[in-house]
Amino acid sequence: MKRVIIKGTGSFLPEKVLTNYDLEKMVDTSDEWITQRTGIKERRIVADDQSTSDMAAAAGIRAIENAGLKKDDIDYIIVATITPDYMFPSTAALVGAKLDIAGTPCIDIEAACSGFLYGIDLAEGLIRSGKYKNILVIAAESLTRIVDWEDRATCVLFGDGAGAAVLTAEESEEGIISSTFGADGNYTKILNLPAGGSKNPATEQTVKNRLHYIQMAGNETFKVAVKKMGAAAETVLHNAGLTAEDVKWLVPHQANYRIMAATAKRIKVPEEKVFMNLDKYGNTSAATIPIALDEMNRGGKLVKGDNVVLVAFGGGLTWGSVLLKWAK
Image (cartoon, rainbow, N blue to C red; front, side, top):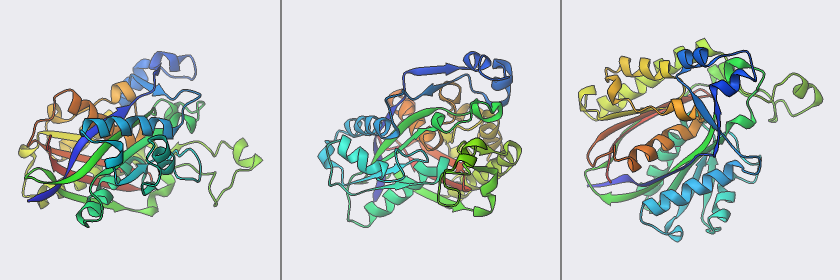
């Protein structure tokens, strides 16, 4: 049976580390407050001379090498990000140039924290069409560039980084087994960046009102996130004829410890099967899941045939889940 598999993974984390103790000196907060409410201890900060496309390219080349391929083997590039280098050109086009494979078709997608999973879904369809063989899916974010460092409720949450995967089709029992996706624009106000687009272009007033920073209604976001992530994970398991007992790993979007724990409880997956690295990197939006997969892959935590459930939610609101049997 021919299935689309993840052939290789890669990631990139900036060198600079910002700890909770560092944040104590910047805003009215404490390590105890942040840890208890989020599970985060530190996060990475993109360097002044780095951009989203720089991190994306670094993660991408590592994924290509891990897949045992060459850059010229890549037929398509998908980059998921809400922090592109520019409104245009696309970050994916910049990545193609930095990888020295300019001419390869590419596209950016914006689905916030669900972006990597949306990219996997798009890549699977393109590969199944027979038109493309090897697709590089990257998620990269420079979220600290759009964080309001005066807002203690949000500035403690986010970090920067990139993760990537190479997808291809092989005759295999492993690969993508089931997936589900959704979105609801009625929830736009609970998690958004109000200004900078065509609706509210940058003006002196939007800058004064701090509308170019992430805004989030925490309690509402928590409730919707657990509901949507739990339902999506249940759907992919049901569609595959599996139960929580069949799951080796649940890899949720690394937004908040309490959201991840509540999602696992809802679908009856024990916490020891939930992969978390939130404490080290914070919420890197679309990049959290591919960073986690690369860490698991290189750390020997993933074994061929393992049932792995990926699940995410993000601003939009968007949500999605992918069930795969690990193929490497």
